Amino acid sequence: MDTRYLTVLRHAKARQTSVSGGDIDRPLAKSGFKQLQRVCRILETVKEKPDWIVSSPALRTRQTAEKVAELIGYTRNFGWNDRIYAAAPYTLLNILQETHDSAYHILLIGHNPGVAHLVSGLCAGTDGRMNLRFPTAGLAHFEVDIARWRQLHWGSCELRFLVAPRFLRGLK
Image 1 (spheres, rainbow, N blue to C red):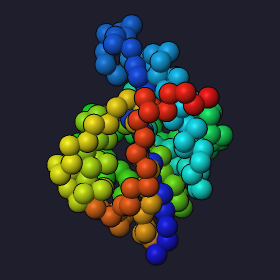
Image 2 (tube, one colour):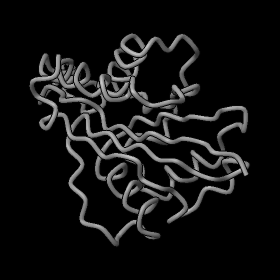
Image 3 (cartoon, rainbow, N blue to C red):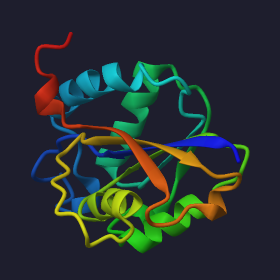
Image 4 (cartoon, helix red, strand yellow):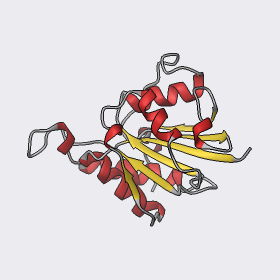
């Protein structure tokens, strides 16, 4: 068994509307960029840095992914996956299971309620067991003892930390 890492990030705070009027085109708000600066201070402390970032293609998640990459020094390609937008937790789990085994630390960036239920399921064994509030720019970091990503299943992760950006106010 190898130790792998999984980080789940909900997109940062977005504006309420977009120029097109479509939800998928909503950009990050200024406060969202500030949230990411705080959250990335915590992400920088993990031993293994992400070597694969997979994100919804919605504008707010793309902007989140790009800003996180800039802040943590991630220089690889991104995986823009249409299935993450409005995904059910089982879909998100399947996306993770389909990840190439050369990745040892996945950072998945998505939307609620899917990411909240994914985090719940990875911790508790089923997506409906925990009533988890996962705010914008909420970050969950897991350690997983699996040899291949396809072995990932509900309850297989050890939660190392769960962070909400409002608890990080005052960090520079």
